Length: 162
Length: 292
Image (cartoon, rainbow over all chains, first blue to last red; front, side, top):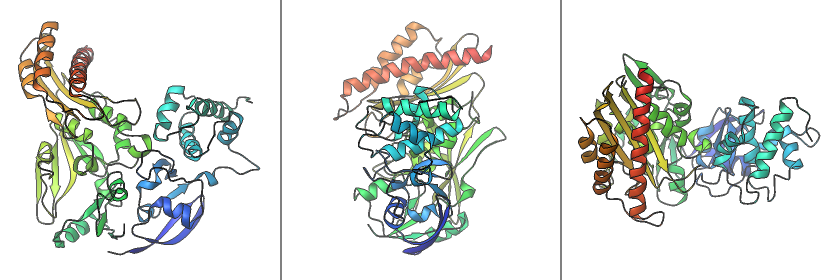
């Protein structure tokens, strides 16, 4: 029984050793300790999905996990996806379609879509909408987001887009 | 919000630890129930026990005609599993519709059954299918109908020092089918206004009802309730339009839904009757189709 714990996380391919407080959430550690500001806090209760990250290959709400529960896991945030010189097809498609307006939901949307497209690049609009249903967007009405994900899927299939 | 966390390495380590505690401890697995309650100030634990590392409670398999589901099995694992295909479809259906994809990747079966803030749709299906709960403490193991874990006056039927370790489910008979349906204000990620779990067994080729079990949830709070009189009245009858019409009337009279800011009592009653008719037709069709 402890109030502080030594945890090892693999975040965006880098091994991180951290001493975390018992009550710290994964979201708090990623944002405040590791400076990964793409991970957003919205509701803090799992309803909005702005805090979604990829943990061991699955999307999860980082506001619903204690940091100590994430010990020895592999985490990916948007910072680990692409960079300014080499954007991921999803990032390029989101820019082309103006699928980000205020941008608050965008990191979660892109990470969620990444997992979907890794499994299935011939996905339907309905499957896309179901998959992103855990992240709320109050700006776009979802149409541009779904368009962008479909276009990224086409690029990942090797088709010419843009 | 400050507390200590205990990280047991094994089930025996956990049972030894909670056996020594006189006061209740907060258990965390998926966190989808506890973390929101912490955020809202509804729970202020001094000590939290993290179960998420106990891989021995994370399994699902079929042994000697019995499905065994570990308490730490994630909802998404059940939703994706082919284990229940064509046998316990209601399990797949409820897990595919529960909350949102990222929450399904965290939430566990055990949490949906025993979590104080849970919406209990998985529990509703498991009760309908006649599942049993396996409870363990340091000194004993109990197997009891999972229905006994329904909250009564805010408490569920588990003692101090006891935890749910797994769920047992008898493989259903061949001429049977089960189904889960819900209606919310939108399709994705909505707390249902009404949900319904049904188990139907028919005699074939007559289509006489051998057994009907019918459970509704969210009619009043999130505590599943049985439509006992309607189910009993349909038992033994040949499935026909007149039987369904009569049963729908009975169901409408039997249910006592509440009104709240989400829906009126009358709306919930009408939705429940609609779900009943649709599910009965669906289950009967699937039983007949599978027998061919």
